[in-house]
Image (cartoon, rainbow, N blue to C red; front, side):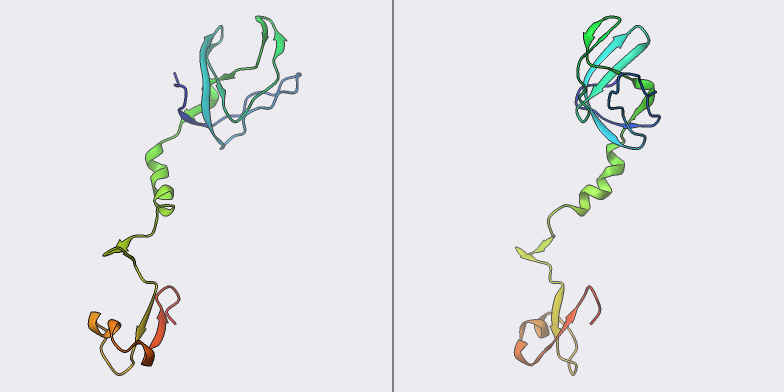
Length: 129
């Protein structure tokens, strides 16, 4: 059974109804808003989809989705993408440079990068130019 706030992914779209409700889409990630157990088994509602309440056999309510149409999202697999959104790493409180200056006649070491910047050429580490 899923818990409120848990992220789930739709693995099988629910059957369309005659009432015109918005249904989950296969491959889309949703957040569980409500969870319950119905006659047909465990059910959920998701935050991203809110349908108008309608009259069903059990009364007037918003539609539910069967949990068999969803599976939990493995949050560890999303960590790769989250790490790309983190702030830039810093060295000694300064952002790591993507552009450095160099003198073609000298070896490139830490002292060379700090001295005589006016006679140096730029080299962009991202493009190699």
